[in-house]
Length: 260
Image 1 (tube, one colour):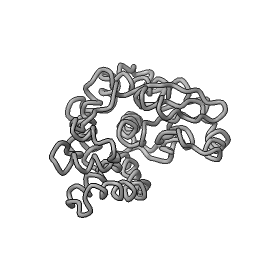
Image 2 (cartoon, helix red, strand yellow):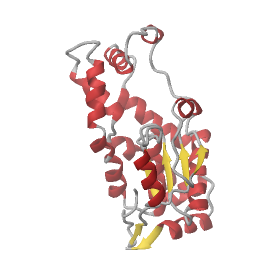
Image 3 (cartoon, rainbow, N blue to C red):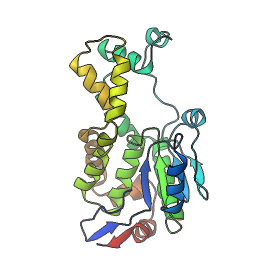
């Protein structure tokens, strides 16, 4: 819930309206009931590729619409053919091999991906649609947006929304970093699988696998720095890169901000 974050001019984001999430594919009945009763969820905006969404379809609470809105056309396959053909290896075992053999640098891969989200027309259109759906449904109930893990495509989307709302930069970064508190068990499972390749993984490999499932401050800082450098203000970014009008930006603030 992005509610409770504050702006520099004395407002705060309303609670129970903007939700950043991972995939709802494995949502429990209890999860769905909470989204229905406590949040009055009205729309789920799925930022995953169509292939991801078809492989693991979302579970939806009653009363919620669903929109497929991919940020990228397809996920990048960074495993070479020799690794992909190793059908006996698990995903994170393959990832460990790719890192140790120099085929991929996770930090560079993800920072470059974040930058592409901000300069590629396909990605920018997806974020424009996210803003428009927030405008359309913001007075009816909550809007939930997610990708697979809720941290990269979704993390950038949250940072863009919060920036345009005027939320303080340090709070945008802190909210993004909350992901790391939620993925420690996943990181340990991934490392257990990765050690099927080699028991004594290099420290850099261990850290990169953790990074792959978590987030790093410099990734989201690169997004915010890009907006500052190329557009000066988030409002200019919303107008020039996303095609929003001043009226739409004002309505967005009216829908999602309250006086603190």
